[in-house]
Length: 377
Figure 1 (cartoon, rainbow, N blue to C red):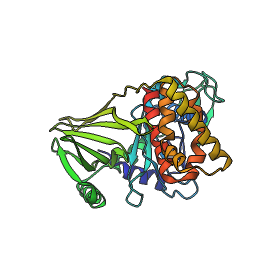
Figure 2: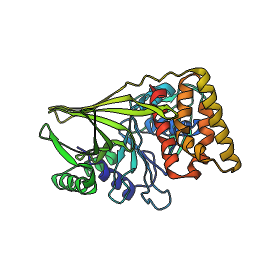
Figure 3: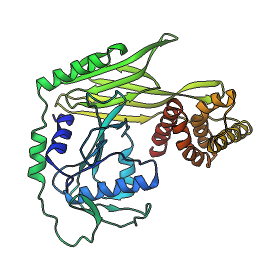
């Protein structure tokens, strides 16, 4: 089993960006431009490496390889995005890799691209790239090219050597367990071994609600691979563990003004098998709450007024400051109730919420995470 933290270290230490490896400070697939550029790089790396995996490392400075990390990214729907925009899509996996020096909410993103031995191209137009475009790697750059020659397999031995040198061992596993238990000591940190092989550590703040146990600030890490499988800073989460399975149901707190309730968002099931393999299945459970259109119009307009004040630098009243914390979720509810322009208002609000304070910006990012899950599904 490959230790993904070691794999990233080997990629950073021994290779400049090349035809099987790229690095980014961050990606933004929430915007059309960022989505298009990400698809271009996936397409180019897949076409340039028909016989071996290729990689994108995210959360690294370009000039000195300093590891700065990015927010946790839930990849459960990223393959849907790849399939929607690429013809002959590769298998793409995004993993969140923790590093000891990073804060608990920051990770290095590792994108692994597994080719399908066919030429991958854009299925339809996106941003400034046209449907039918084919991209390849020219050194460290992803370029559009006309495909008229057979691609030579020049990277398989190099990539195989890097992956072989990144295999996990008992020392790395034990170090990973102790690192996790020590760093999450305040959150009921636990570990469990599945199938006498997989070592899973998890932690969360325990909460009892009407005889039901929920957790918040949940971390779940597969120590063998040094991969964070699940991370939630805000949501309520239920956890069920058997000898073969770790199941998580994630809830989100939504509502208008002072009336909110928890809605099931997504179920994540990690199945551990006897052949030293595991798989992750995700099922979207979310049913958007419905509200009276007249009441929504009033609240929507009130949110627009708050946003205009933020744009003009006008001080908010005490009541408006309270409403500001609910603004991202309220725009989400409006969008889910056929207020199509609410999504544009949410995008407009981003820089102003980011500058206002860290808490409201965190709520904004949480809202985008919910929206991404719903849209990709």
